[in-house]
Length: 105
Image (tube, rainbow, N blue to C red; front, side, top):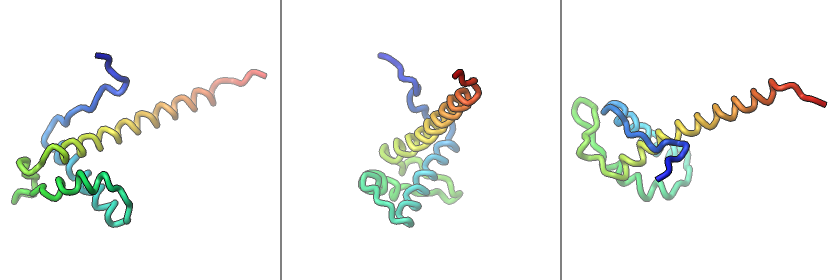
């Protein structure tokens, strides 16, 4: 099977990184609800899963309450953000290379 240029979605390496991804997903949903942004796919599939996520007394996430939808969405969201930054960096490099090359008339 061929590998694509993106390399696939890497899993989080630590629990802290995974919890960070979950908190980012929760913040994304809060932002969209507060600003009345319509995203029916998110509301239908991910919000019920995120509502089930519980925290422990020490304010860490109870890992047993995270289901597959919440886990996949959190990790995918973080991965998609990193892809967007890579694409932006490529565009900046290409535009700077074009600006540096002398024009021949």
